[in-house]
Amino acid sequence: MKGCAVRADEQLARGLQQGDAECLGALVDRHYAPLVGYLYRMTGERPLAEDFAQECFVRVLRAIGQYQYPRPFKSWLYQIAANITRDYFKRAAARYEMTMPDDWEMTDDEQEQPEMMVARTMSTEQALAALRTLPETQRAVILLRYDREFSLAEIAAALDIPVGTVKSRLSLGLRQLRQQMSVAEVEAE
Amino acid sequence: MMNDNDQVEDRQRQLLVEDGAQADEAQAVVSVMEALRTADVALDAAARAALLTRLLPEMPPRRLTHRERLVQWWPLLLMRSQMRVVRHEIWSASVLMLALGVMVTLAVGATDGKALLPFTVLAPVVAAVGVALLYDSDMEAVLELEAATPASARLLLLTRLALVFGFDLVLALAASVLLAVLDAQILLWPLVESWLAPMAFLSALAFALTIILGESLVGIFAGLVIWGLHVVTYNLRDAPPLLYLLSLPGLSSAEFRPALLLAGVLLVGLALWSFDLRSNRGGINT
Image (tube, rainbow over all chains, first blue to last red; front, side, top):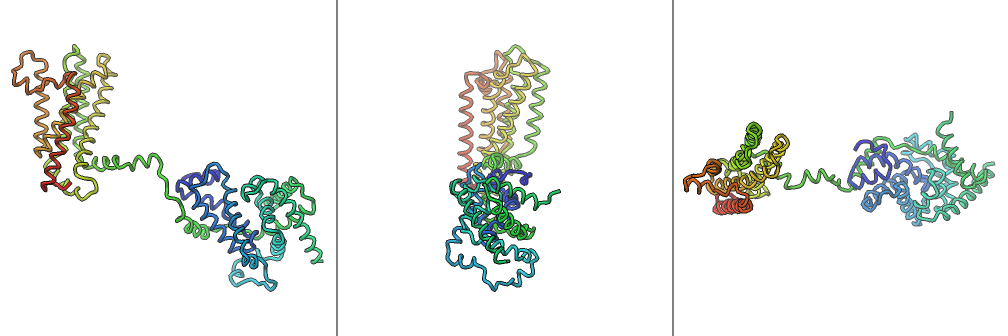
């Protein structure tokens, strides 16, 4: 179908319902990389983030029959992502893997990829570490709000919580992040 | 000029102001987000292709549009397949003969309203001849081959009948509209009524005779003779009784139109029954 690139997400989702593969391509182009970015910030693991992003799209396709136009597609996609990360964080083993070991080193694979090297610079690590100090619920609202630039209503829809809860989590998250950064600065000095 | 990073940072600060964040909180968020942006990786073509390969099997089956559904509707598919099998001369001959009928009718013009118009004379014969030509000498061989297809030979025969008769019917209707438009003295509905019942009856008769006797010439001949006699005796006051009887006097009478249509249906039924009977005896496998 022509003009997929200029169609709204919701129209593309309707195209998906009708089995239009080009609509899938357009949605992947539009949302896959930002979704991987969000999941990477949430989990701290790029391969895991990529797996989760792929899983999000698989779940979208499996549930596309239940999609009701004009429900915002982006919120729906991130709601699925939030469900996936929530399940992930519920698992004790996953929590353990989230903490980066002190003697962490790049693997051979990572050394071969320049973008992975950039991703592992100290400041990125510090940023990820700072985010990790936040509970998962606060981390999600902070990232959706300031990294993905979602509106409060979109965050509420994606995380299936009231707007008031979004605001309180944002407030708590901001405070905690600031405290964490202050501690880090003091330690650095 | 602002670069992309500056623009993103500006939007973040704006959101932070909206959310009532303090300056140090805002700075903390901006620093974290900026550091993380350097870790973002765009989706390259190979990764995109691999991702789509993984996702495509999960796609719901393509839903057909109304047009596609219509195109794939089995009666239409059957008609399209049979259109290729029917002799091409039937289409062109029908068009030519009916065009001739229109021209002659326009040239002669409507008479006293009682005599048959040239078009009314021609239309039933054209349809009857076309229908009779459906079944020729090599038809049985063709139907033998088609016995291997999911559609029965009877259904194929009926489809061809519907195609040829339908084509002539539509053509005659279009020609009648043209005549009514071009000649103010010709009224559309009376004109249609004048040829419709005879066309249906003569076509059914030609079809039945052809199928039952297995020879299209018989159907053509019977149609031509009966209709020819009818047209000749139509205006004769003192036609010989036998001739009058053979001409089927009610063929163009308004009172007999329902009976003619019913007789047409019965004749088609009889032809199909006869076709089945022959098939069951081993002539044709339906």
